[in-house]
Image 1 (spheres, one colour):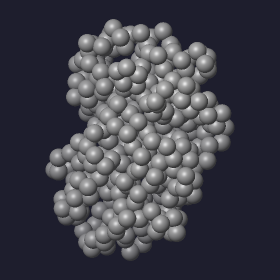
Image 2 (cartoon, rainbow, N blue to C red; image 1 turned 135 degrees about the vertical axis):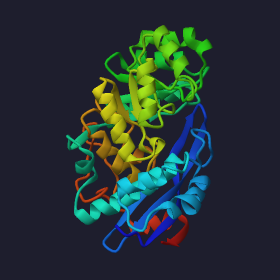
Image 3 (cartoon, rainbow, N blue to C red; image 1 turned 180 degrees about the vertical axis):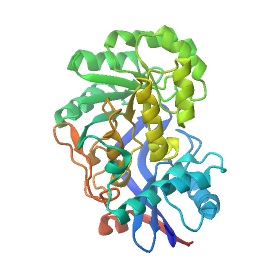
Image 4 (cartoon, rainbow, N blue to C red; image 1 turned 180 degrees about the horizontal axis):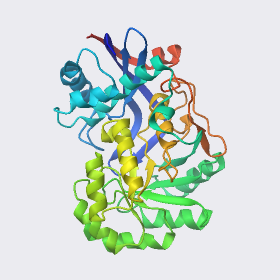
Amino acid sequence: MKITGVELRRIAMPLVSPFRTSFGTETTRDVLLLRVVTPDSEGWAECVAMSEPRYSPEYVDGAAAAIRRFLLPALPAHVDAYGVGHALEPIKGHRMAKAALETAVLDAQLRASGESFGRFLGATRDRVPCGVSVGIMDSVPALLDAVAGYLDEGYVRIKLKIEPGWDVAPVRAVRERFGDDVLLQVDANAAYTLNDARHLARLDDFGLLLIEQPLADDDLVQHAALARMIRTPVCLDESIESAAHAAAAISLGACSIVNIKPGRVGGYLEARRIHDLCRAHGVAVWCGGMLETGLGRAANVALAALPGFTLPGDTSGSRRYFATDVTAPFELKDGHLDVPTGPGLGVEPVPEILAEVTTSTEWINL
């Protein structure tokens, strides 16, 4: 497939409410979109890097620079999605930028052939169960109101963001208010150390599905130690950047569940490799979210329809984060989202909405 040019488009997407985690608060998503143009089709993708390097070393300005200066020049004259990964392998890191480029090429490739993302990846379901991620709140009553609202909307699983000083009490309050039947998990975003093991063990009493990334992202050994000290299953997020990392974590006993975020691991092809590896070893996986617009959400929903995704993911409906999405909104139906069936991502940006939220565009001839 010959790529004739690539558009880098920045958009500003205000969130419906601030989203606070242990590493910061988001009020607006500064999103980098890629549009890859070929003689036969065009493909879209969303880079999930955030404005500042807090969740990961990548950030949106750096991702745009990496794509412009290093990734695009590395592509051969003719390339498919598999060839993108091979061509970019000598360039270290920049997985979110690589994922965006690979995804845009794959979208163009699949649109040209008339195949959907779900079919290409190996989806076995036509809809996926949805969880919701609830940020750190100013008070427990505010948290309970938020959780009540999401349960009323039909979400089948609740994830609470936690940090030191905001953990046992809010989890207890949610359990007491909504009961043991609610699927509940917590996410620390690496906010704790192994010295906190005894404190984290207090969460064992609440029957959680998992505790996500409690310790530093670069320390599988201490996660393995923690997993032996608490009953709550340990899930890794930031620690897993590739199938090789997942294999090491499983071998060490550092986790029994993996959160697969395609942007974090370098793309949907690597995400599928991690899925296959975990499934072969009996390790549950679920699809995480990065406050994506409808473009990123479409691909995530397709991925979450693979057979190894046995836990509800963070594939929330569009209105969880945005009053108006750049695509037709994803609407929750009985706690599920439909897997798009059209060619490629199965969704496209709405031109009028896209124009309204665009802050800059850059065209690069290849």
